[in-house]
Length: 225
Image 1: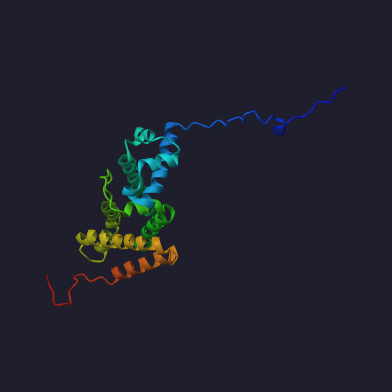
Image 2: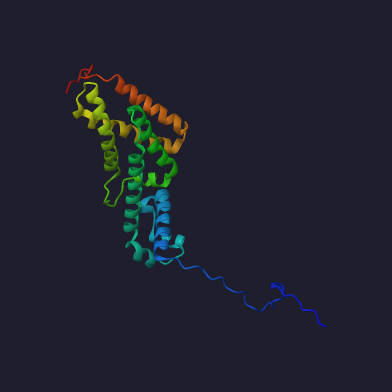
């Protein structure tokens, strides 16, 4: 009786070609998402001008026409990336405002922006750059204005209850949100102190600044107009 001999890859003759692994073909939606993620990373690192369609295509392992097919070019890809990030940030801030106490609402707004910077760093780097492409959702300045509108309602109610002019709430809302946004831009690079401490200091300045607010602020310098 002859025993069966087990064979493995080592017994394959050296002149036999190895089998090619079949690559799974991406669906159109998967390819589009892949290009968006690659574009997002490259735009954050190099900016719009420093990123080329060739580089995007090479990173994705596709030809340039595939990028054009999905987005019409680099401009189209960039516009979609920016619009998505702006919506994400606005949604994070809007959904965070759930508390009843005004001070806690300030904390939630500060944390929402800092959370976005920490979790979606590439997106924030793209947003704070001057965009060369018009966006359907506007500019970063208009986004900050949208966020300030959310805060404006909170301040308006607080102003009214304290006897201040609620018509000035939009001005203070812009000032507060702008303060958090610019501080967040600085914190993006230094990452010190810790996020919770940054939020605490921002709210400390904002809240106690509002707490000592003068009903009719005055100028003490020589310039009066």
